[in-house]
Structure formats: structure tokens, C-alpha cells
Amino acid sequence: MKIAAIQMRSGLDPDANLAALKPLLAEAAEQGATYALTPEVTLIFPENRDQLRLAAAPFEGHRHLAEVGDLARQHGMFVHVGSLPIPLEDGRFANRSVLFGPDGQQLGTYDKIHLFDADIAGLDAYRESATYKGGDEAVVAAVADFRLGFSICYDMRFPRLYNALANGGATLIAVPAAFTVPTGQAHWHVLLRARAIETGSYVIAAAQGGVHQNGRATYGHSLVVDPWGRIIAELNHDEPGVLVVDIDAAAVAEARQRIPALANARDFAPPGLQS
Image (cartoon, rainbow, N blue to C red; front, side):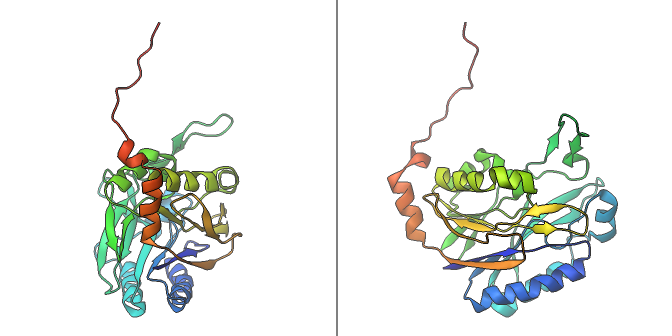
């Protein structure tokens, strides 16, 4: 089937972001895409909690998500919103991914599991967990002849999640992202290729790109990696755009037969210190 990675430059206004998304989805549909993935923080790209509170809306009855469902039905296409912030009862937010079917109905949701909490020398401590609550469930959903594994951005640094998705039946894994430029230049391609190689799966990564309203700059370079770890298509820039690629389920079976790492994996005890 044909799959599409949608590259965006989302800002602080959900209405404007949705307006920017519409022609990109239409272009993907015109090119024959069955499934389209949008980036992380598609509908609002906030810089701080105050901006989140002003624009984030409850999940039930979410107006912009309803419009995306209408677009999926209009184009007869699976549309996967990479993520958007959803307010929770404890005052924090879920970074939630939402998949719509060609009939416009929601088929699955996933809350980003891994949150970036770090103390970096020379910089203030960064605590994503102060604003977001991490999810606790891996998700796989059916998309035509493929099984789609859900992940979001920073998740890509945690191979155990991708191993669980593949063992749960995933043959295509989505990585919507908003990678910074320095980490993108250093790690984007190698991490995505590694996740494809170790699981024998296709990986599709739809990215934010360029300088955003909130002052942040993101790397772009949306791409698709095949189950052998080859980058088969890439938007080699940070401008908004659409990347449409043909994928074949037989390639997953072939890669897993040639390198049966999933089948050969064994449980083991953690290391102990030996003297």
C-alpha cells in the first residue's frame, strides 16, 4: 500500500494548523496514499504550560479532532494525528496520538510513554513530566494489510518499546516527531534505521520542521525506512511537504526470515557485579 508522511511547521493556533494540514492531506490522497501520518504536536506546538492551557481542549467532543475525522472520511484514508496535548484531571497533559479510519471513526489512541527529564550541565533541568503524564500501554492497530505500532518522538530512544510492538504484531511503526536540530543532525537517521532493523518492520517518521512561532527550531527530514534498514524515501529539508511511498508486507516477512532476531530473543537475568 502507499503511505504518506506529512511534514509541518505547526504554530500556536489550532485553527491555523488545521488549515495548513488540509491541503497536505489532500495531496497525499491525490497520490494514492491509504495511510497518512502527521507530526508530533500537529494541532498546537506550545512552548510552555500557559500556552497549553489556552489552546488544549478535552478529548471528548474535541472540535479539531472531529474535523480530522471528517477529512479521513472525505479522502477515504487512514489519518493518524501524530499527537496533540489533552488535559488530564491532575493538571498535566497527555501527549496523545489518534488514528482515524477511512470511515472517519477513531480506531486507536496512544499516550506517549517516555518523557524527557534531564539535568544537563550548564543548562536548567528539563522536566517534561512536570507538564505531561506518560502513558503506560503499548498500542497496535490494524491498517489495511499492516499492523501499525504507535510511538512518539522521544520513544524512539527506547528499543524495548519497539520490540514489544513487533512482538505484538506490528509490521509498520509510526514515529511522529518534533526533533531539535542538533539531536536531529546527530541521531535522527541512525535511531530510526536501528528501530527498523531490530524489529524487521517498516518505520515511518513524520516530522515538524523549521522555526516555529514558539521560537523553537525543528529538524524536519521526514522519512520511511524499510525492514532491512534502508531509507527508501526522505524529505531532505525542513519545509512543509508530503512524502508518499509504496510499502510491501512481503518485505517484512523476508527481513524477519533472513534475520530472525525476534524469534531468537531470550529472557535473561540482569547482570550482577562479579569480583
